[in-house]
Length: 106
Figure 1 (cartoon, rainbow, N blue to C red):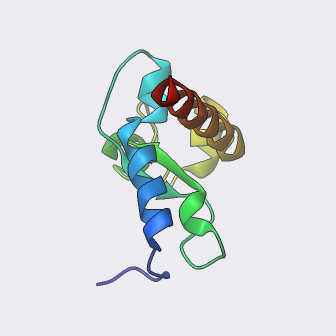
Figure 2: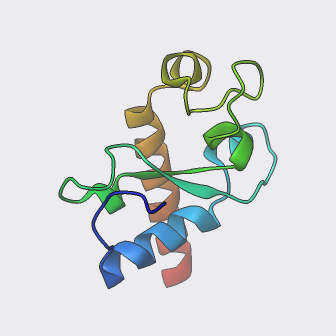
């Protein structure tokens, strides 16, 4: 079964790849690198939805646990109570990407 949403553009795909390369944002805060999946914070149909993504490992994204590690799906409130609001996590991801870009330019 395919998920609903618009196909990402080249620039959106590039952005999502850079975000995923950061590793799970929650694990990263604990000093651990875990490969990340992309979590769309605004779904996949709204304009710019592919730019509003978080890198989450399987456990923090969709494993379905309501205990540590808490999964975003289906436990959004519990996830945000434990790890921060998605909007704050998006800002953190943005800062990390900016820092990487600056380092790349040096």
